[in-house]
Length: 72
Image 1 (spheres, one colour):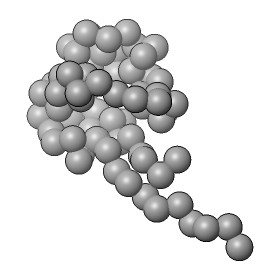
Image 2 (cartoon, one colour):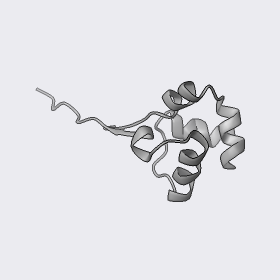
Image 3 (cartoon, one colour):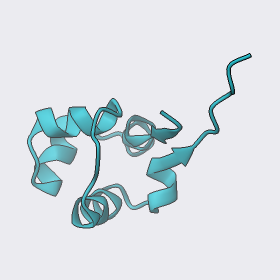
Image 4 (tube, one colour):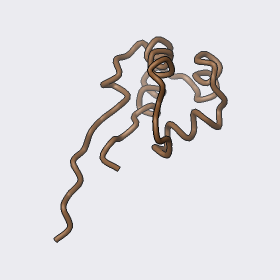
């Protein structure tokens, strides 16, 4: 998938655990894990807002687009 989720990067920069972030934003650790590994099909704007507030970052710090290489 060309959308990369960089929550782990921001967690490391903020020296915060996944469990702490999940608690702060009000989602289960399991749902945060689904987001972190890129298996989520969608993310609510309110969830992105909560993540950005908790990590003091911008949405672009969390989401990254990488163009997929075309098969030869």
